[in-house]
Image (cartoon, rainbow, N blue to C red; front, top):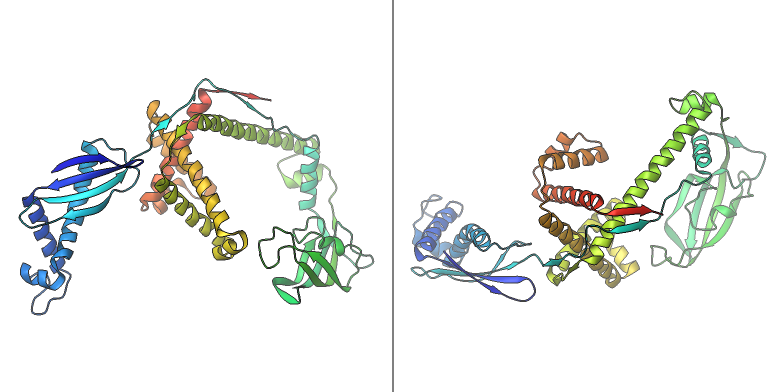
Length: 430
């Protein structure tokens, strides 16, 4: 086999591959035999038809394509290895010349990894804003605990307060039409923490049990449904029940009920420690992000459009799957936000993801950072904990998917390079 290379635009290289005539003929004959085993030819058992009959039945071009498909993976792989090509996508065949008794010539194209010019990535000093504990942080946590363990007491002798829970029937209309999904029966609406349209819960405050009334609101200008953006709406309301929260008393008995504590002071000390740990975790995460951002910003790489297009397409599919899990239709989102804007954002995200990956790989190469078995085991343990699975069970589930394995390996390498950057740069918490 002979291979010559030609550099083309951006990071594309053309491979001119020549396969000796004998090897090409052998591959052709094997293709004939393979095809004959799964096609039905009158008068012959599968695999027993002569070559000339198979050629007439399926055509020589189909046989040549089968031969090339069998030959090329090994030939291209050998060309990549022999010429030390750092490819980032599967090479693809663009042309071939296959005449029996002559050398087979194939033209393929491959995309090479873009060159990355690293800026300073060691010895940096990066300032990070502190994430201090709020003065009332412990008290807010105590209040949340008390709310979580509160009782709901039905009241009948007063109007609804802004701290109550109102159990309501509602039905919404906009521009004379009933709002799709804009109704409910016996819905418990927390008037203090409502995620309904602004102004909705506020108009229920002051109303009494069994009151039937209408409220008027305006949908937000950035509402996800294009038809309802900024539009006025009327909701018919009926109050079926009003409930108030009765908070438990904050005492040692309550502390013992919510955890392994003897006193309220023990509970508060545990909350304080949790908030301090959370602060440390947040500062650590922000420090890693700022160091990485500084390294990325100092690096330069020209990303070919073909890479961006592929990554954007992958991001789009991920995005559509996440939306589907939330019950949101992609086409509806395109209609409400505009396809051009969505695709522009996907392209920008794709550029960021590609540059991050290329810079990480470049640093790993420069510093000879290698993935070890323990790195993958650590990553699987982290992912298993996130999904509530044992690492070995997670490996069984995804072990048959090479793409997922590659993704996990990349994540593990990302973690290792980030650890290296944190060890070799200084962070000042301000």
